[in-house]
Length: 213
Image (cartoon, rainbow, N blue to C red):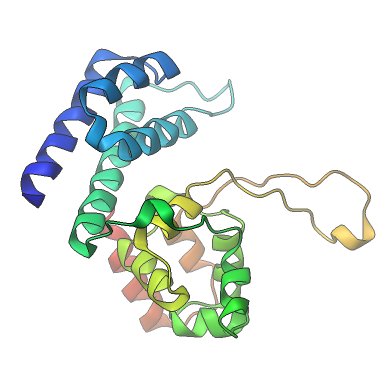
């Protein structure tokens, strides 16, 4: 049954991409009418697709680049759908959304350093994840599972949080009255390479990230 559901979702995503050049509210609503059982996954896919297309005007997307972005988004959404089915998340709709990873950690008596250590990360990586400075399509499924386990949250709730719009940040905000700005998102592998993790931990996470490509 799980395999049939994933095949059905894959077919729905294929239809969406084949029939439309860009996601819109209208074409998304049409597809949801055909596949109401996959409404949440289709909405998340459309949001991720739209986000990937929001590049500066000077960066024109060629056909191959756009296809690569779409393929990555589809692969990521199918991975999430598979994990949801595997975990049997029947009541996830009732779970309250996450406002902050670090707030969730504090609720359980942990600070950012504790959360980082429990997931084999460093504090900088937790900070980047918390403010969504890392491209969600490059974050390994294993890390999403680990965060869910440590924070007593479902896989889907963690994944949804990581796919929210990037939080605005400002350098030395306490000394500046300037409006907070958004920095360009990093890929997870780049964030790992820039971290203070020991070599073996970096290699392990880079190997996990390669599974998402």
